[in-house]
Length: 237
Image: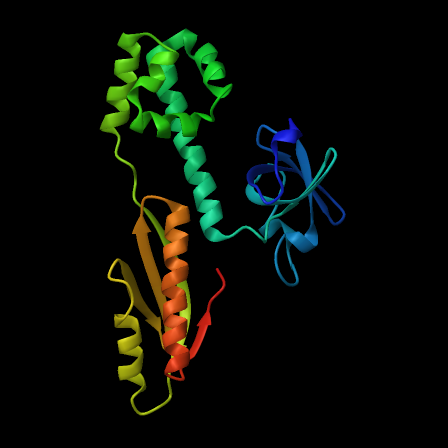
């Protein structure tokens, strides 16, 4: 099933074994791959098992696919990408449970039929907008049961955070920094961590949209910082 994978795709993996400088993993539902130690973490790794160990689940990015060989990276996965994948998998688990509860023994067959056209998560996301979608696969009575369950479940609010440094050594430094932070979007929340360190938090429904909004907010703060001759630096997560 490796043909379904794409380069730059974010996938859930389970560490199988470690041989020398190579980590062998099983890609969730889709074959095997390898990670070189240089793709585990940036900089020198003192203890590899702080990051990977047999049986441990990790979120990776596909770097290259060469036939049956899949090269992965752990360190290149961004925080929001990891959260997005784990959220999607959590939803899928919940949706499968709904199908199994309502449909019982026939659920496996229906799940396979749905998977011919959709991923389970995409199917249920579309179902929120088009209630008739489920009726292509099951009878009216069970369809209504599933729709009722879906409508009763509210989407959990997502959030992204980013730490940054901001300082100004002039006599008006405190006022300048305050003005920069207050110019930020009202939908975001900025908290003081320590001297010259802050955390911006933004909440919403979709991780991709949140990431775009967060990037714009950070860019605005950086622009204002340069204009006012402040020191600005994003802290790596």
